[in-house]
Length: 239
Ligand code: URA
Image (cartoon, rainbow, N blue to C red):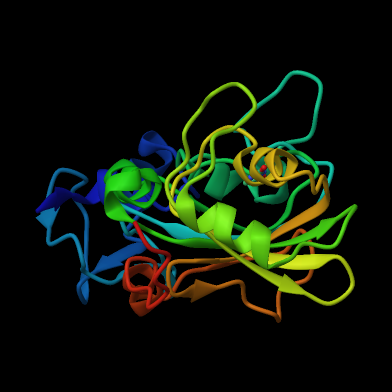
């Protein structure tokens, strides 16, 4: 159970004191009842309406973004644009943050949420969530690279990687599947086999694919079943 003003402020649309004003003015309905006291408590999932229009007051929110190149996967930066700049102020106010990072020049699927436990579970190598990347390399990859990835690469600085999967495609492109998220991991793995990466795009996280309807820089809220899809991948990459 949560206080009415706190529940309404979760929308990001109103501050706690604005929420109190709306409630005292009789403009807020929660779970079908018009609320007059901000301190009255309601179940977390109750429908909240302001002036008859429903407002999303869920505690945790989850978004997928089609990240464009040239934008930082950070919450704020004094000089550069960040992925948060692609969201409206009421959602930025909710404390959403990227789940892991994509490099500035990497495009594709980026999740954002204010649910720290969810983010941790997605990122932790222990969860085994496999991320699929489409890479364009300077040199065509082949079966020998697939073998090296499957064995578990050692990067130039001695870092050991978990076994991963590489599928060569036509035209100097390949798919790379990894289940950890070390700094510049895919680029460094490709460099380690002498196939420098020229372009990188994340296509999926676990069983969740980037929605092809999203243009670069566009985002949408995840549906509930999509949250579980993240932990529901059928790709086996060994190890
Ligand atoms: N690996 C990289 O090298 N860069 C990314 O942005 C993501 C994975």
